Length: 144
Image (tube, rainbow, N blue to C red):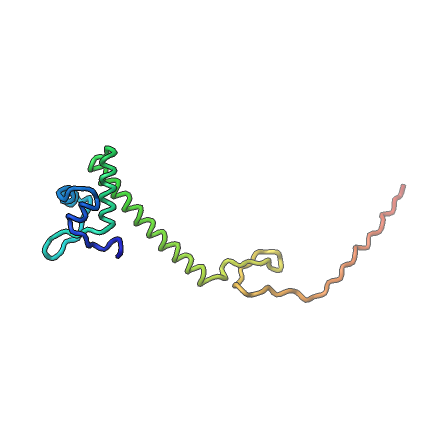
């Protein structure tokens, strides 16, 4: 069963959350926890709703007002949404990097410049033979 599957009637959700069913109705009216409705208009709660009800009870026991609880829950939902979007973007970036791996391979060009190369390719090496000879340095004639 998924944590978002709405299966609990109000009496069961209240029991799981350690609350009175009337409290759940009040929280529904206030928009703190909004269960789904069946065609017969009875409420159905999920495990996520029950966890949220428990969190509301803890915050209330710590002295947080219902308006404060609403703001906290709203911010937590916003953070969850942003975290989900971040995971989507990270996944898209990883896919893009996997699909275009050659964009991060670099080599030194003939003049020493940095060049971008495709993954798996090699630079062309010069096959010229260069013979090094020291410069013919002659001492300067001293007229002293």
